[in-house]
Length: 392
Ligand SMILES: Nc1ncnc2c1ncn2[C@@H]1O[C@H](COP(=O)(O)OP(=O)(O)O)[C@@H](O)[C@H]1O
Ligand SMILES: [Mg+2]
Image (cartoon, rainbow, N blue to C red; front, top):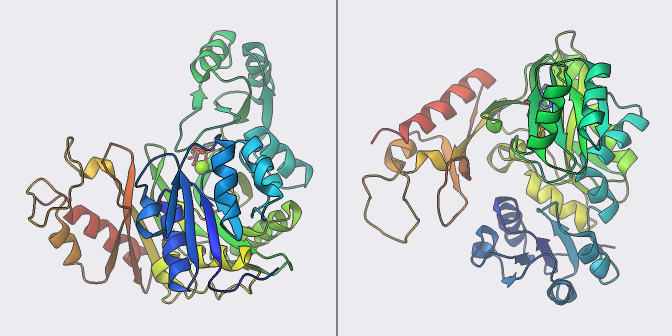
């Protein structure tokens, strides 16, 4: 199946990922419909149509599906019942099976493990006793993660002592019916490979990026990650292996830990464009959103090459805004806004804002990207530009 420009893409979820897909899709002459429960969501600003409905509103989801040619998602927790109801109407890509695996840490870990992909030693837990048994097996420190609904460090807790009391406390704190306990891995760096695969098995990967987090939220991505050549190669091969094994059609982000001995282990998968691939919008021949579009439309993939030797991305969180700020279409400069002119004086840094209604601490509001001759200078530039936002 090939969907040519002019076709309509349906996106379940209307945050920044859908918005950037919409920008890439509209540029290529596609139409975009988005379904999101919140009116005036970030994707709606650049979509042809928003259906405002909850993901479990089967009638609304069906109606939505009937008016598009292919369905994709940026929100991973669309209920299976809703996906089942529309799967017969138009293709959902990546497939509901891929989503089923990747949105659930236990299924994801078991999938990786059974395909011979290295992961941190883990233990599946359905009770505090299971956590205690897992701690005995794995030792401490360890991390207990809920099987579902976790993101940006939410739904997980570190356990530092291997006793029953600590196990009970962690189990009660997470308060989820199913969890995975993972051995705490001593990694030197976190990297990710964002890749794309088509129905014909064509595969393309972006260079591994180095991810630095702050408060469990991605802070900076620097590309290419400075790795020995064979590790770069291996990271891309692992992503390729996973994409093939899972039968990916679309974009997949593979988060990895680099251990001190240069071994790679897989942390988690996201079957969609990823925050660590946002730099591709400005810094690559083809961005991750256009790759997603091409893959789900049955088209050849684009060239993922970097336009310059290096790039970096810095997230802009709501913390940069004053506490009570809400976006209003004002033309006058509000003295308490982030200092946009000072940031934009960094002439080779690109600003992306997602058009979110209100800024909250920890909320991803936008990001900055820049390119340079070396990863270090790209990283320094993007941090300096972000710092300028605070120069009120
Ligand atoms: N097994 C582990 N050992 C050490 N650090 C970990 C482990 N699992 C997760 N982390 C740290 O916690 C962060 C968030 O965990 P992750 O599983 O990626 O969840 P999220 O969905 O919140 O991104 C990781 O980026 C990493 O820094
Ligand atoms: Mg993660």
